[in-house]
Each structure stands twice: as structure tokens, then as C-alpha cells.
Image (tube, rainbow, N blue to C red; front, side, top):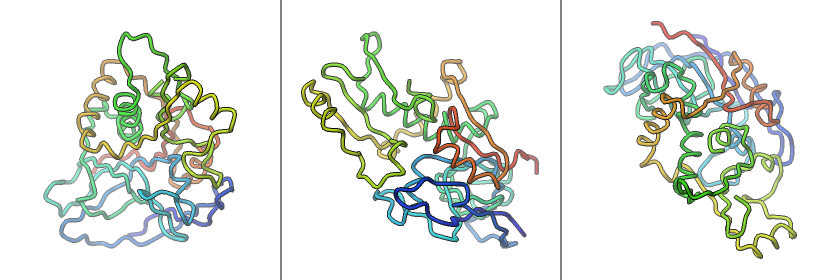
Length: 281
């Protein structure tokens, strides 16, 4: 079977701005048969995210994400539908997601790498599992619950520095004894600086003078709470308490353009690429 896929065409350099041409669309052959434990999946939606900028470098600067390789298919968050299954946990027609979904129109995956998702949790909006009812939503939820020390009715002030993006649009502090939660800093991703990047001397002086703490946060440290978190986010969405924004672009061939746009602030809410809306078998 002939499919389309996206590979890393070139690296922008640690201090360079990524462009659509860093990615290349090409045709590839997908095997006709799958092995025991595998599934064949049709890709429906793919995610582009700021952290992927680090994966474009030969050294990601992080111990929990690996670099993409030149001329090899790239991957990230994805949602799709199973077309054929030889895995006991999945049947044809199931909707599934993965944090390591190859950027391909169709893909054969190890079933153990997938999580089944219930379309009723998002009222049929499957792309929400890549945004508000997925990793960005969990990042916002746990960032506030676990690190933000937010208490209802306490008259606290919450400041979100990137409030138009996938996480910031959901999360929505610099006073005396305040607390800064660091989770992503897209404005610094095109620079060869350590994370978290050092503060300017004047800002650092104010931070120390006012006893402002600064703490890193990684959502992957809370995997044991993912399931309950997804259910909470879904409930708020269904009750109308969670307003979800997306920026959608169609076509696998536009993955590079979508990534470039996201890195330059072209999105409001989660940037999604729709590869296929066909959910019939």
C-alpha cells in the first residue's frame, strides 16, 4: 500500500528559525500484512507542539525527548482509527491515540503503544484529545493543582504569560512571595540557551528581593493521574466550563507550514492538522 509520510528534511540549527522546508513529504510503502500484537491505523489528526523544536536539533537538551533523524519519519501526538487489529485490546473501528504517532496517512503500530479513547468524552471532537482533553489540558490542570498552590476563594492573581497557546488558553503570579511555574518557553526555543534560561540581572534581583520562587514543571511526572485528569477535563467541557479553541489546517502536506505557523504565533488554542476526517470502514 502506498502512503504519504513526513520526514525531517533539514535542521534549522540551534539558533535558527524553523521553516516549512525543514520537512519533506514523500511516498512510502506500507506492508500489506500486520503481525501479532500490531494494528493498522488511519491517521485522523496530528499535533504540532513547541517542544518539537528541540527535537529538530541533534541534541534536544533534554533527557526525556529524543531528536528526530534526517530523512526519517517524524512523530508526535496523534489520533486515528483502527482499520485492522491483531492485538487483543483493540478492534476495527476503535479510536486510539499516542504521544509518538508517525506523521503518516496510515501506519502500522505496536498496540501496546496506543491508548483507546472514547469519542463521547469529547462529543465526537476527536482532535480535542490532542489539546484540551489531552496533554496540553493535563499540563494546565496539574500545573495549577500540583504546583500553582491555587485555592478557591483566596483572591489570588494568576498570570499566564502565553495565554493564547494550547496550554495557556486553558490555564488562564508576580507579587510579594509569589510563585512562578515554568513549563515551556517557546520564545526561547530558537536559541542555544539552557532551560530554564537565565533571567536578566535586574529581573533576578527583583525575584530575590521579593522572595519569588521559580520552579520547573513536567506533566509526564504525573502519569498516574492522567486518567482521572482526562475525565475531569471532559466533565468541565460538557458542562460548558471549559472553552476550547483550536486552529485547524487540512492535509498532511501542510504539517511543515502548520509547525512554522505555530512557532510564530499563528495559532489560537491548539494547532491541529487534519489528515483525514473519514471515520467509516
